[in-house]
Length: 329
Image (cartoon, rainbow, N blue to C red; front, side, top):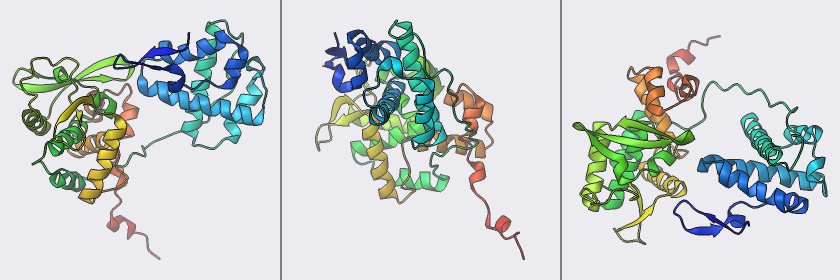
């Protein structure tokens, strides 16, 4: 029943290795265990949400096992959940995410007739007003230095420049960019476009900036992918085979992109806190600095709410020395 699950590339992997089941579910019975696995595999379609919810839920039940060993699933109540939120470490947003994950799981258990009541219903989250995001942003000068530092005499350099450019110039999430196949970079009229799969399973099409269009076209030409007969299910951004200059055909993963960004940041001498999400934030900030509106930034970034876009508006980060010197005694 719980032995196998189809992975993203249709190979079979062990579900128990992918989503570790807390002992409390095993003790409660086979139906509870199945419902736990089903919550992640059948209920949650977004891979990022799936793994973040799993981390949050495992964290909760590990704490529960430590503080209340032997407690049965049906014995968990609102006081226990509230204690977890109050006493565990983490930021307000982290605690609220954990609460949301645990609440969703218990709702799923109730829907499947495993439990009658949701112990999280009466537990309130922590007020958390965020006016500005924490994602590191690169200045225009740092972005220029980063692009210029990449050796484009090699295919790996062309790939890395194209990947960073796609995130910066389209405000796209790393998962959406890495999820593109060759067919998702396409011609519409005289311009190239990106087709991005965003949160909630929604496809979002955005025109490619002429600079990133040049970057990707050069990468595809040298890689021999420009005239590929089959473009469906062929990853746009691929890993390399060993130390060779040959693409493997395998899709780059977020962890591999993150490691690449770290290497490139060190080589360019830019902010070492840069991460995959940095280029989305840096692109939006650059766009707003140059007269773009938040409404248009929201549409390009495929944000549901303009308040989310505002978190990426980092124009207020720079406080001039002249302003500081206005403080006088």
